[in-house]
Length: 330
Image (cartoon, rainbow, N blue to C red; front, top):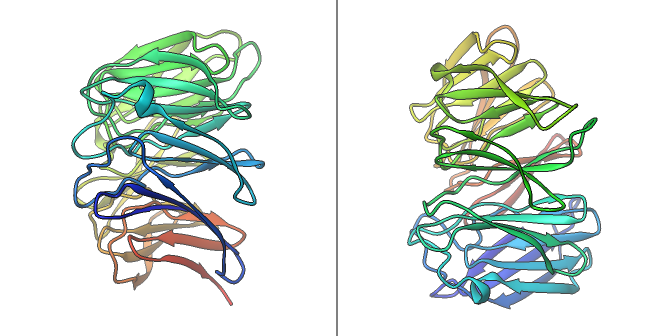
């Protein structure tokens, strides 16, 4: 996990904990090289780190990208603010990096210098850089794996549309122009892309070319700040009013709706036929999924939580602005 400290949030931290005991194994600290101003409710460490199984890539609102091995040894560091000093906005950046093959992709969009870049995972060198629209955006890049004749791509969502970029070359494969949300991110599964636009817009992508077509859209599935969740043949969204909606992925037809207690910043997690939602005030809610949604449990954690929970090894991992929890059966 990452965090930041100091009056100006200019101290960047990467921490590693033992998953069984919670014991801290190591911590590394770095000075931020870019602007660290954020909204009081956010932090420089808002982005989620990524890993390729050999390295950890920690990205911060200061546009610092740090690569460590799994023992915490520094491999390389890129202060992207040195290269592009006008990149940044007054409330902070929150887009998380994504690793696709041997490339880690960062998406930096603001009213200043806006771009996306593919960075070599081994060396930290820039493989490609593409200009982006000069508008604030907090959504994260998403992997679209190679399939058939379709090369591995990264999906870059911004307020004016979605662009698919070849992850090796940075070449634009296609773009879909539409008004999109600037906080929740897209979801790509198989040959479908679920885009937070006009509620939810679903694009069908071919494995024989770089072509795409519109499958369906529904303005009744509009997400709030949380990204949509796709599980099997169902898609789930939770809106700003705290309404959890389940719909069919085939046609967008609503299956059921359930009122939950919001507001939500983090994206809910699905595991074992249940959905785990944690609202901004730290109230955990468990919804049993099926023909209808049923609220089967609540538990207050008592701290502000804006991060998405993670599921691994039969456990739920949750971070607040003060603590890291592991929640699991005995």
